Image 1 (tube, rainbow, N blue to C red):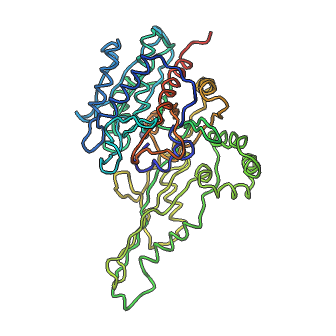
Image 2: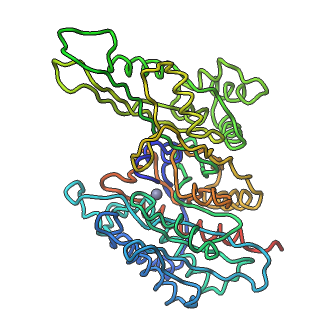
Image 3: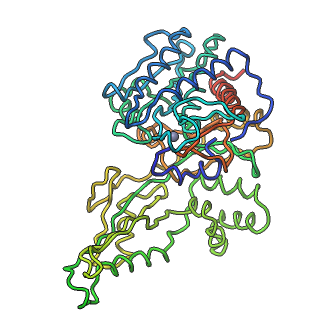
Length: 479
Ligand SMILES: [Zn+2]
């Protein structure tokens, strides 16, 4: 997930990035070794934006596939420059198949990591106390390695899927200006065009109660807004009632007291329905009470006390930065705050900006949209967060059946991600995208982007088994 939003990811918060292994996964020795070696190789190639190269990682993965017998024409490394390469590999399905391919996307880049912050070298693959340590062990070189391993495993078996499966390992999801999914869609759409996409960068398995296999079916839209007041200023011994700091403070106080209306979409409805089965007592009753034709306001209010629930129920906006004034003894000429919003699908940034303007109701304030790159504009994008894709029966049934094998008793649950992943690009390109990750991380052990990032060794190998079984379930013709 993206650097700036990872902490807000529902999947990350509720489910861990992906958790704790189920028992008895029996991988054959060759697959296990291959899975280990590929993971180690990826971790030890630095793919940070500052000094790393996704091209080196892309080429290493391409070589693995070519060595395993994939034809040269089906494995390519390409990108906008020599440091931001992406790998695209096509696993050929039955010849003459009329079915459109399935696309798997995984980002190769990782967040920066400093040696002095870590107990071990973040770019060394260290095995210790039942864990693999290294930058990217959770986000998301684990899933990249799993996909490559399973491509090789299926190829060696001679497995022929009922359609092509495409794997795109890409640059700049976390940082940087060369997002690989975006670049591929704009420049080589034909290489990755698909009926739907799987993105293991979100979703995840939670082994502690409630035991859940979460998959991301929709995402909120991210939006930053600058709230700015300016004044002529002056000497602080002659205060005036009109003060830039007070204008901004009043606006933020209004924001604190404001809640956006409760909303539902097919994904959150299913989520709350499943949660009602898991939860007990008042919470379970409240969950049922918000799903009816006229949601019970008291139930909405009680559930909103839980920050995770609240984030799934509505658009949220919160003050995240504040500055103003230039001297202790001067009236402030300027004060500004950043308001960070996570917008419920179906609304645009501009719609939310106008709502903030209305809420603040202060002509002295300027509310401007702040883009990803920091530019300010008087108008946010009118693009709405994509409506959730349909929960396809084939994907859902395969996910339920494979999850049932690896994690018996776990509830399979759709989630709306409060953060953003590369699925935003595939979704906007009209490719329904599902965040499905078979690697389990305990909630307390979510270290993506943090120090001493690590993954349980068992969880990793279970993940190898998960995607293998899952891809086969998706691409084995019935009967
Ligand atoms: Zn990620």
